[in-house]
Image (tube, rainbow, N blue to C red; front, side, top):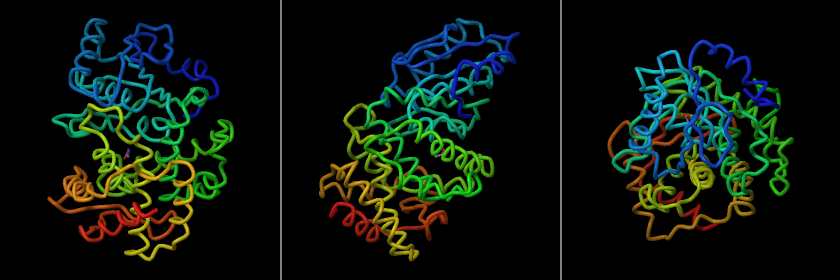
Amino acid sequence: MLCSDLHSALKPILARYEDSQIVVVRDEAVSGLGISELAIRVSEASKSLETVQQIWDFFFAQGLTRRALVIAIGGGVLTDIVGFAAATYKRGIDYLNIPTTLLAMIDASSGGKTGINYHGLKNSIGAFAQPIETLIWPGWLKTLPAKEMLSGFGELIKTGLIDEGLQVTGDRLWDKLLQYDLDRMDIEELTPLIAQGVAVKEQIVAADPHEEGLRKVLNFGHTFGHALEEVTGDGFQVTGAMPHGYAVVYGLIAELYLSVVKLNCPKEPLQQLTQIMLHYYGKPQCKCSERGQLIRLMQQDKKNERAAEINCTLIRSVGDPVINQVITPDEAHEALDYLFSL
Ligand code: GLY
């Protein structure tokens, strides 16, 4: 739920828990709510069992019962970990997300995917557990660095490509995204686009909460994107990895290229996104020698249903996604050639 005043939006929700305990787990970089809290420093490297244990210990120390509410305040890594800790504490307690980054607002904080990284594999331990609510207050974005704004915008671009959003507002999200001025990054102008993007995701998740089919459309751009993210980092220990939303934009270019080649998608969205990428995101910083490794990573992607297969969501046109498209290594090479030739 989008809100213009966080405290007023929280009030009726907190009233529902007035007979039980309410605690906050927040990123130490953001402000709290004056409620009992645990402030933790999070990064992809700390998306681990140790951090979950720290949160469980806090819940036990607070004596939380199964009727308690946990409020998670932070970016996507934090809301993923806290959601998982809440989903597993005493077989599950309620949690509410307050995302503080654009990436978390658009994607991670809604839809109920919670979890941690394990044995070097991203989000390999986790659970589907829906938050009781996600409160999106765009005020957090005023101080968010431009790079993080662009990263979140990458997921919004994906949403605009897979769903026209017509059922939400009657206007195509993709057209509005093309008109949005990324140089100014005006938060007020961005707010309705966030609302539309979140509404699109919520519709998809409501129809397929456990990703049995339709929800896979949200993975558009992510087969190539995850591989690029992994190849530019070093497991989860390095902070220099490509920001997630940048990797998604590069992945979208590769997968739009394949959509043109394999599904006859019109070239226009590929050309439009290529312009946006060159102007705002820059070229992917990746060496040609890494192509073999990228393909191997895509073959090992946890989304694959069959070993050593490269599986992507592609689009026939803007708003018309097709899931479970099998890509040959040669086709993947060709898409990477296109991406790295730009
Ligand atoms: N991040 C994609 C999903 O929630 O399914």
